[in-house]
Image (cartoon, rainbow, N blue to C red; front, side):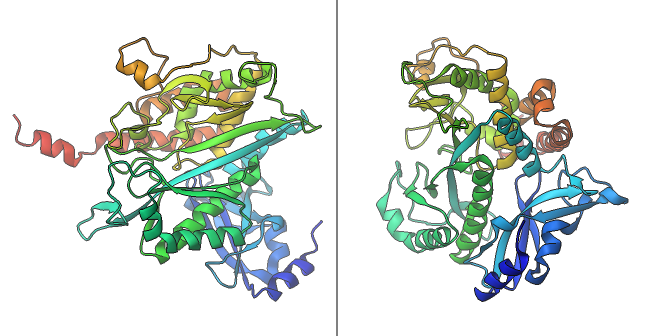
Length: 443
């Protein structure tokens, strides 16, 4: 039980007067409202109220006991926000009618974690956020916020780090104050692209932390006249942004479930089963882990201006092989499919559900890939199966994968499939500048 009076007094002593009660909609976008600190018990035990139909993907109606979405504050998540003086951030769980809401993505992840707890297991997730710093011109054109960021091969560009050190240092300071343990900051392989790494955590905490990372990045980039962008591939001909998950599971004694030191790849039988589950359900997972039309511009065999691309296009795995969908590293798995447009709670939940199915069904993993798949493709050799080519195909794959949708939660998946099918249809019906340029006078 929480001592709310002590929590309130401690936060007031730090100058806090309000709580930012934050939840996550089905698209992975942070939503919420400011509420008075003094009513912390009310927000934690009953929740801050929101109109359910006003939130993407709740499936709640316009009237009745289950028309209201209640975000129940998790008191242990309270953190003063460095970029919002007087305000403490709090993560919320979604409820409706006094019950956990099945379409709430944080609840979806918690249900998967409960499946692990029944086995005495814990999932650990390290998340690698890649992002772009952009600006929008008066005529609506997007470009890197740093106009001098224009190298042909910009990875690890220190001059860009120097030019943008004020933003990066404000990020370092804010994240450190929020409890992040930073590991590295670097310029990535596209102009305007950066990566900030921090330590791993248990699955739920890792998802919460990534949402807080995005919130800080949005606020601080705005202070510096830039836009923090999670768009997977804003520029054709340049690499896109991934959101790689480093996955490991420990048992009740703290032993690594995926690891077997006697194996050539240091993977155990459960580890191979988890890999097999990811590959078996990869088409359906694409919809949740790469959930936008633009995601499939990243997941394409395309030329990169920098000469390098790491896009995981083929359903394969290999030891320290970044051209594969799953990269194994000393008994740990790197799941390279997700991109930063995903709902991180749903993506981790679906990834876990797929991996557990592979373990429980003893699905066989294919032979490990020990070559550069892009080189193999260029040589015209037979390739592993590819991921879906577009969002429409990915959504259909998810709809047809009843094993995965039942494991993740049918209510959530139905809302997700409906919204994403509409998104794909809207894109398919649109007319792009490329089409006008190519066809308007062609025939």
